Image 1 (tube, one colour):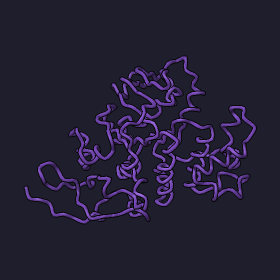
Image 2 (cartoon, rainbow, N blue to C red; image 1 turned 180 degrees about the horizontal axis):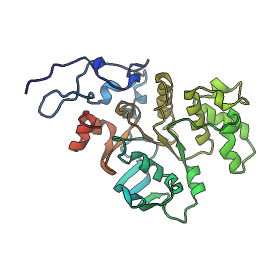
Image 3 (cartoon, rainbow, N blue to C red; image 1 turned 60 degrees about the horizontal axis):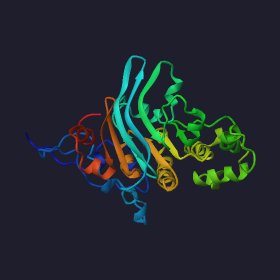
Length: 317
């Protein structure tokens, strides 16, 4: 077979915000197969060339990897069903404390379904059922005796599209605290959460104005602040940047890196470059099964499964 000519990286159709300020577009080729032949499709993703330019190398995701991180949630042989249709098959993986875990895979592979099992959001869908265990603090969070409201205080969720309430910025952030009956120290808690979400400086002079007047990126950071206000241990993010522009995406990614110092984060993303930029660990899902899990650098540079290599190099998905 005649070898395809190499082409510059910037001619490959990839996510548009790779050319955003602070990211490094470099010369690369379409995915290379094990036989050395060039294939059309996405470039093979390597954290070495998609990582954000930062002056402090300790902020690069691979530098923040903790190989000895404590397992905060231990998922064991998880099976999930929508009625008679099985969506997840024997999924087992650890969610590691103060690490960012990215879940990747083609549409419909089960990664978002898995994410929603962790705070039992799927319980709201009639006819669903869960088998297996997810051990957190010595308890199986799938046990029917677990208080779901209490669980969702420990495991917060940020959705694909920003969903601020039609209330003021202040009341959006304070909402969860009011539900818990906490009325003392609200102003301090709101300020702290907005600072953590990197939004305080932008809204501190208009806290009583409607949250619906914020930009899309600001609304998403507000939703993150709202989730942080109740002091969760884990923050789940279901494609949090998919509806945002490149600059807003950049801010969310920087925020994820900063938050991992205090929180455990699990993010679903269709963007492999984003997974490489922000995560320390990556799980690859395909057809409802976890095909491979490990340190992000290993998954992207030295995948152990052929399916993982094929997906990362753009041969399908």
